[in-house]
Length: 132
Figure 1 (tube, one colour):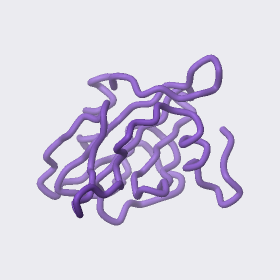
Figure 2 (cartoon, rainbow, N blue to C red; figure 1 turned 90 degrees about the vertical axis):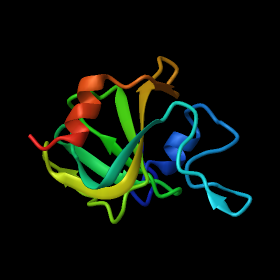
Figure 3 (cartoon, rainbow, N blue to C red; figure 1 turned 30 degrees about the horizontal axis):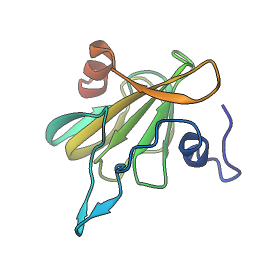
């Protein structure tokens, strides 16, 4: 996976997936945007979210966690709305963060190298929400 020189995948993603007018992290009329088209919103009530696989958690420029894993290399998972996420290499079941709500999106790498937001598999979302 191509990373920026600072180790983030923010610019890599920004260049390669659908560009909606409003993105998580934007502000409109003074209010922060928490989700966007394609996100699944979950009320967490300050509960935890977990690494669904062994992988790596990074933060993009909008404050969302981008989770990647060699177990499903054609996918990235974007988790927005989390507090103080744990970053770096994680094992399956490690806590990523807590939050009042989670906006979850799955991105699939396309044959041309771009990323498209796709419907997430229910079992992956369940693995993110439940401790093993």
